[in-house]
Image 1 (tube, protein in one colour):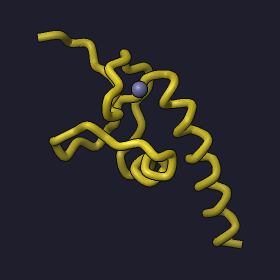
Image 2 (cartoon, helix red, strand yellow):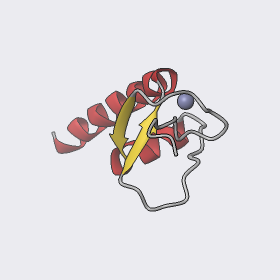
Image 3 (cartoon, helix red, strand yellow):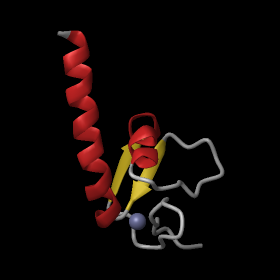
Length: 71
Ligand SMILES: [Zn+2]
């Protein structure tokens, strides 16, 4: 068994570079038109650098929306 984790995005087998919480990233991943390839109820999602960059933009947008909601 390999200890190396790979990206949890469907059809992506790249090496995991970042982990994000599933709670935070779930919506962003859907918004980016991507699907997760995980069966278990894991709390952390592994992402390769490419996918992390895509998700990060969405996460930032979500934070801005949250801030507007509270103002
Ligand atoms: Zn990936």
